[in-house]
Every structure is written in structure tokens, then in C-alpha cells.
Amino acid sequence: MKRDSARESVQSSSQHPEVVNPQDTCLETRHLCLDYQAQVGKERHRRRALDDISLRIARKRVTAFIGPSGCGKSSLLRTFNRMTDLDEQSRLSGKVWLEGEDIHARGVDVPMLRRRVGMVFQTPNPFPMSVYENVAFGLRLVGENNKRHLDDKVESCLRAAALWEEVKDRLFDSALGLSGGQQQRLVIARTLAVEPEVLLLDEPASALDPISTLKIEELIRSLRSRLTLVIVTHNMQQAARVSDATAFLHEGQLVEYAPTDQLFTNPRRRQTEDYITGRFG
Image: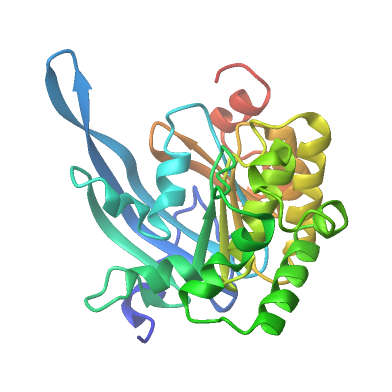
């Protein structure tokens, strides 16, 4: 599908200067809003999780979303591979494009979209099978059963996830026997096996110890040369260490979006400065 030429003329407001050139854009949202049903006592009320979000995310870079709990970080992340579809009570408006294609257009193959835009969650979720079969799982689903090809792919993905040396003698042991940090890197290897263009990471290190967190951060930096990464993190130091651009959200709104160095050292908005200096959040 061709990029909608009408939206090319839409300029970011002075509040959100351009961070990514159109030709470098992998993901883009325009006027994105998300409402959901919230339980308040015995009644359900519609609440807004995302309010008029417009931003571009650069290809083969790391973009971080930061902000206080409940600000919409994870909700925004889940719009990029239509995970929000799984909540039948949610209502999405606005546009999301992947490489210039409207991901909500009629006829979009959602399973293929989720193959192109992989996701890793906060808590490691390896399948209750061997290390080898975890990585091979997605390949088998698409019909790959050649043992040599599977062996090569499993090894290459485990190497890409910086896990091969730790598990090469345990490939056929249960993945559930790995440490939490190893399990998270295994999940990343499993996602890489189907060759996504984008990797979404929803607080991937928040449940891990400092050493495992360091390995996940090193892995994120090593992957930026081969795919686009978007990370949600509550850890501002982590965002500063691993990302090229950072978006600060508050109460469902995009407050500021800028190159990471600029946002942390010279924020344009007082609200951003207050958050990163700990005055609220």
C-alpha cells in the first residue's frame, strides 16, 4: 500500500519538532487515540489511554517510551502490532503505519503483522519445551522442518541473543530451567527466528537482577543494526543508556519527543524536566 500523500503535508507542532525524517521512518502514528472500559466500583466507565498521539519512529534505531505508571506507554506500544485488538472493549482511532502501510487497512493479515512486529513482555514467557524447540517453534509453524536449516537458525538466533555460549550444551533441556535473564533472552531469540522488522520490548528487564538487566541492555544495543526497536521502560537511566530517541508520555498525551541526549539534558517542556528530575512520577 502506498504512503498516504495527504499526511506528508501534516507538520508536527512546535511543541514536538521533527525527530525522524520521513524517509527514515519505520513506524508512524497520526492523531492516535485509544479508549477502554474501566471498572469503577460496580460501574464501567470509558477512559482514554492515548490522546492524539502523533510521532515517527526511526528505522534501525532504539526508541524509548518513558513516563509514570498508567501514562499510556504500554498501550502505545501495543498499537504497533494490533495487540489492542485483543480487548474487544477498546476503541482505537487515528492511524498507524508500518513502512508506509496502514496496519488497520482492510485485508491486513494480522498474524503476518505480528510476525513482522514481534513483542517481548515484562515477564519472560518461554514455552514449556526445550530451549531448541522454543527457538524453532515459529519456524515450524511456517513449515520449516529441515533439520539442518533448523539447527543453523536456532544457533544463529541464540548467538544473536547472546545466549548460545550459555545454553549450547543444554539445547534439549527444558527452557523452564533457565534463569530469568536467560529466559528473557531466549524469548528474544524465539522472536528473532521469524525475522521481524520491529521488536517491541515492554519493560523487558524490570523483573531481572542487575547483571541480567545489563545483558539485556547490551543485547538491545547489538540488535539496533538489524532491526527497529521500541522499548517501554520505567527506568530513565536505562532509556538514557540504550535509546537514540525518547518519548515522554503523561496521562495518555505525548508531552515531549526528542533525541535522547537532548531530552535528558535540555528538555523543552517544564513537565519533562520535572519528571526526569524526580519532582513527580
